[in-house]
Image 1 (cartoon, rainbow, N blue to C red):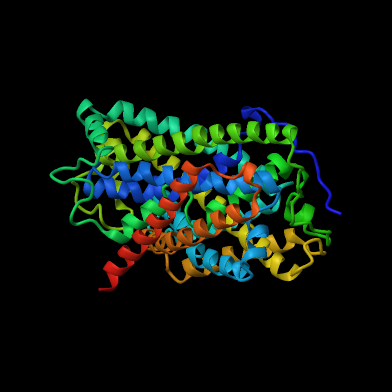
Image 2: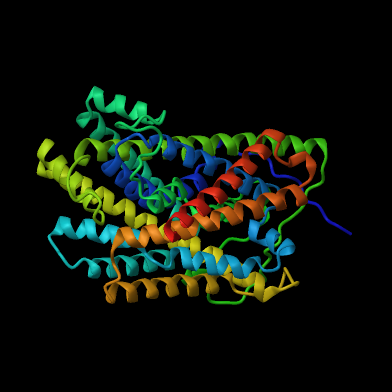
Length: 463
């Protein structure tokens, strides 16, 4: 006989804050800090529309991922394996392929190395990877550590960037940004003829989190206790939760479809939409546009912008010239910290994805079997850290190359998981809690767009 639990009472939006900060922070060091500003430095602000469209697409993608976890109290991976038996293997391989190259750490180390005057920044990158491993290993619960660090970084960094832009931008610069939101570039419309399509695809994929990272939203809201996730288990730190075998329950709970439970669900749904729109979409879009505008103000038209992440170094130099050496240094430190915390978030998210999918493979049909998810998590975490350290030690450390290659892989992964998750939602979730017709149309359009965009971009490089 099937058992049901009551749908939990809604909490306030203030109490909900957390998961959206985490998923937003995953994009800060790639699309927001590097790829979109890189494009603004080389092509101008006429592509600002694409950055906003990219993060808007991810808002709708994320909300369908949240919908499943909110209703079922389990990650989307636990649901997908019941429909697609090959899904765990795909998610492990595509996640590792997309994020094994530690591009954010390489970029953070290069910026910080220039600030310190150290030319060989690989040792900074290696130290940064080790610090991430230690920070995540010693927390009581991993989610709490990630949430606290990302909230502080975003709350401090975004206002500081706004101050820089307000001080440095002229009225003409703001007008250029406004024109860019409507596709008006400098002597071109929508997309410049000489654009690097691989970088453009990568930036579009990273306008937010990108790749399989979006799927961890279902894990984070389960960890936070959204909706039916209130009944789920949490992952403890290496020295808290990984020392003993535990009875793991990856499957969620069901609630009876009645008036009272549906009313609670609808309240939850309205509030999670609002929370995600404010934190992820609005703050994320503002962050991208501010960084693009700052890049345009300081280094657009300068030589060397297309080489590595030299435009970031150029931005710092311009800020020093316009304001002072102190503020140029502050900019470099803020950028390095943003990149470092993004790498930390990426390592956490990818380790969660791979560990949960490995556990699903190990458990097979026994969804309540005994397996130590914390130990598996830390095995994948430190495996990635070791791989990153080896790459740096062998001098594979060019930030832009690492980021673009990873981003293109992740753009393809997004096309796959958008289709899988939304097929599952339409097949599995009760009709009363499914997406409305308009959202279904939007999601289908996004799925088709990602597929065509990825195919055209990759095809243009193979011809």
